Amino acid sequence: MKIEPIDLKRVKTSSIKTRKNKVKIQDFAAPYTEGSTVKQFMGSLPRILKAGELIASANAIVAAKKNNKQVILAMGDSVIKVGLSPLVIQLMEKNIITALAMQGAGVIHDTEIALIGETSEDVAVTIKDGSFGMAEETGALLNDAIKSGAGAGIGIGEAAGKALAALPSTEAPYRDKSITYNAYKLGIPLTVHVAYGTDIIHMHPKADGAAIGKGTEIDFRKFAAIVSMLENGVIINIGSAVILPEVFLKALSIARNIGYDANNFTAINMDMIQHYRPLENVVKRPTKTGGQGFAITGHHEIMFPLLTAFIMELLEA
Image (cartoon, rainbow, N blue to C red; front, side):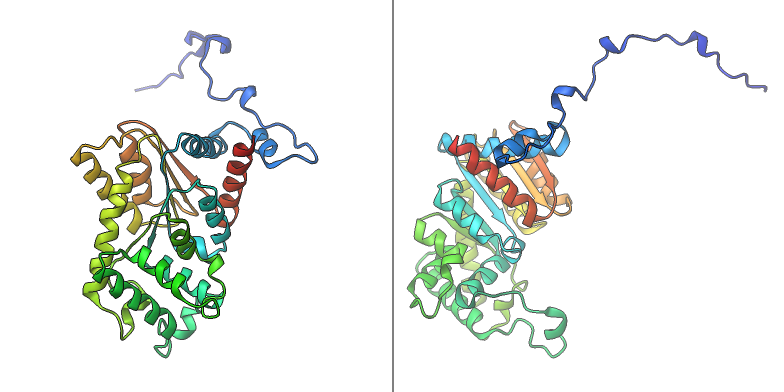
């Protein structure tokens, strides 16, 4: 069969003025002005795609702060390893972050910062002779704290903070840079969520699986209680692709099952790569009942300081 080209004269057109458009000049970026503040810089960003989501994220956190709502930071250990602890501590001191959650590696790196001002060994080198993860001080301090805490009905996060606070300053000379210590000092709940066998302290002679399990079980239930108060608040997941998104989803289900109003909040995921679990279990599924979800992609060491600076300036306005 012979196919004749379609006659375009038959096509019906309409005016662009009557069409609904997604890009408008009022959403364009503004030229940079020399001497601009962070707030002015953020105000100059285009209100399009991720720039608009970053601004909306900051506004949601500021609104939660002003209305005395929860701002939960669920953070992977990468936040510590790229040097962001001082910013997290600043946000705690300003009563912006109201609760924190870590996986096991987070409290480990944070403790090492408190003890020696350094962390993150070269695994490619130390795995060769089996010396990887065999730090005496880290394993002894945390395992002793976990056992003591479990016996007293205290979760891993609080137990680790209490242990650091009890040390002479000469033994923890850098604890002012420790998130765990500062959370304990400020009375801000910090929970630690452990998968047994994933952390170096589980290889230490003092490791007690029952105590570790009990400590993280206490922290899970404490985290569920925190999540139950999330209505009109904010949950930020940064740098955790598996553990914390899974824990958050279960804690949220518990809160809703019991009857708490935790349906309308802002969920933010920040990471270099957007993974399945954070997107589904933090940003998308939990906000189907209301609220809003944002996925901000970029390096922690750039994006989190930018977000923090914008929050601080918005609060000072």
